[in-house]
Length: 334
Image (cartoon, rainbow, N blue to C red; front, side, top):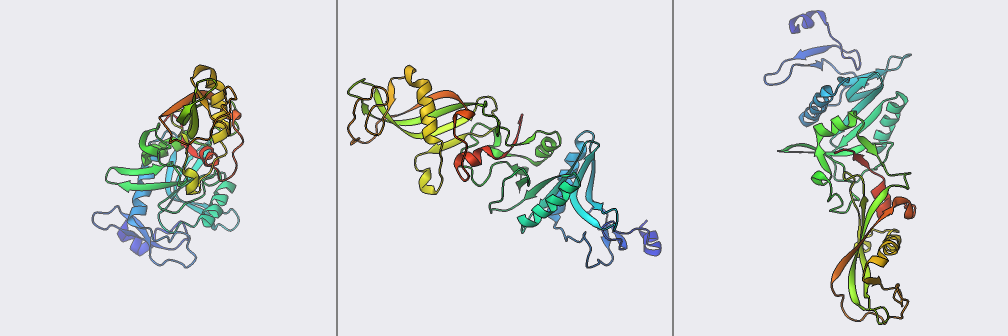
């Protein structure tokens, strides 16, 4: 075939129509290369070996998923000019859907990625992007971006974001990391979901308020406590990470509007079943007895717990911990 191609020019590049040769370097998969690349060629990416390897991993896993036809370096051409509209690193097709996987290992240009995503959308293609960067990137439904890392143990996709506080994934497996092959399978089986709790005020949450004991109330003799931490987690979905806040996070330019509402909701639910009372600004919140300003250091710590609803809490404001907590991609049944 290679000898015939030299004489007869049997093969041309799908991206630009230029003649290609067949390369069979020792130890490598035989492949086509341009004899001379036109300046306007959409296919000349000069990919690194690592980029090609990850494409192979993605394509191999996608081919294992039922009903999907898989192609690497797949092109979509305009019907009138026959010019390439877009090219996907890996394209998975079936009658009811098409998914494009893109690998961007360096120089992630998010504005360019948005433009390419818009072209995919116009072609009714769902685009998923893998990047390798320490910079923050937009987390949104419109542009699904995920960090991919490679170690001796394999290739991993990170579901956590740069805004997550360490430990937020403490109930889930892998601290927010999952194997790339598993992630591809989840994406193609519709288990990759965007913000599953948004718009669902009836979602039950298990909330905990951590507190310091500060002495007993002179009226009701309950232990007066001050809240210093709050957590909330889905009561039904262990795959979803925890909301987490503690005193001191505000000094790190992190803020929440949920701390006080969480305290109020948990206190309303647990007040009759506990021997502690939250210290108000100047009075016990159980019996309203006036309290002196706290002079001694905090005593022991403790926790109050209650089940509440997501709708019991205020609508998250942009830039808060709860805004970032609710707006994320998650793999269900993980």
